[in-house]
Image (cartoon, rainbow, N blue to C red):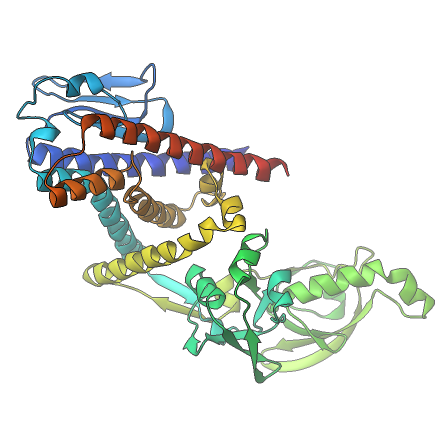
Length: 451
């Protein structure tokens, strides 16, 4: 329950900020061109609002709705979410949207998208300034990666060190690298000390979208963090800082060791029949640069009585970079543009069968936030959502900003406006499409929750 509340609070805070900035973009451009804004509402408010006020000598009412699906600004003289068609039947007024030149109306409509994108760039810049950047260089991960079943089915093997895709070297394990692999014909890896190739099928991304387990994860060395008093490990002489590199002569990672001991426990009766003590193991370990071996007998639960070090930057080679205040801005802009390109590139997979199944609603969005409060991750995910909101809103779909922009371009080229009746029908069609998409996305969340 606590995890749910933390994620829900992060989601509401993030969406509130993004909606205020987005609608603020429309609002500021409207006021710049002396267009009247009748209402500025955070969240939607069908039937009633939670809070509202109207400052003296202001044309704008500010409100907070109860339905956290977005927000809106009601601009005089345009057909929008409010579907106020009666206003459009009245004589045109100089403070109305429809009375302004096409270029001014265009800037008003792209204001929200522009502000969301600028917000993302600013947040990315401040993240780099405050926390810097750090990542594990995949080519230098000493034990390589563990892969899921789909990756193994196309030729990857646990322990492979990823090098390049179609000759382009990998840098870090992220969404861009996964897209790079899925779009490649050949991926080069280091396997058992030698270079090998994995040939990628065209449908790899569709197959990966159907997985509930990530494509790969780093293999961590088994480094002892602490040893319990009077435990089998303590009696055998294991010490904190020891790095276990082999079990019964077979090189291992931390995950390998857990799997091997679980398998040993499962096959205990068979081993006993072969006169083998299943609880007796031989460990090879490194201490202060010196490799040695020891024999020990684990307890009845097949545990040694140790805790492993799980601090990533102590186990794997990390690349760390810090930025000054002024250095952070070009780096943040580069990161924002890279994120946008990656997101746009992955949109093509949305139109596949598996891609449509992966479409998620508020449950999916909430799940990307960490289960414990982490400001770094909160701001990082907020910037990412701001990129998504900017891109989705500029799509040429009626009822979205991009739909209005499309009709404005038509007006500028054809030199005549679409009729009010056409705009009314287009707005209704777009809203039906968007609500259908919203229902489908949240229905997917329900299916994933129960099944």
